[in-house]
Amino acid sequence: MTKEVRDAIKTHLEYLVDRKYSDYMEISNDLIKYTYNGVPIECKIIHQRYPWFRYPNAIGYNYDDFKTPNPFDKYYKARFIVK
Image 1: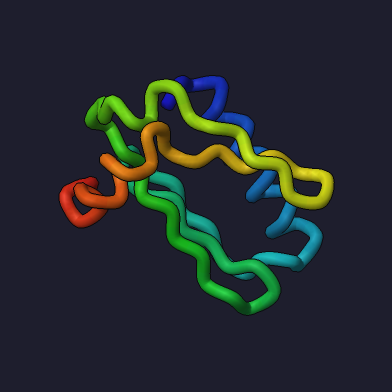
Image 2: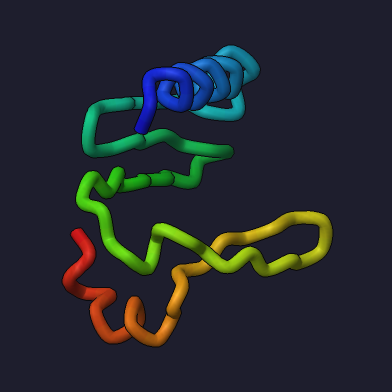
């Protein structure tokens, strides 16, 4: 994760804390933790380069695009290895 991305996430989480949407936030090199309307959210940052994350497939749902691993079959077989 680049410094710019980390700063953008931190700025957004600080905004959520200021507006009382979030009670807690923590950002480290390996983890992003915060709450949103009382729901705890934890995101692990993956540092290792896996081939199926290099060129993700974009899938549209409503007005958003979600990126899924490509090829998904290889990722799904190895999903418990990804740490």
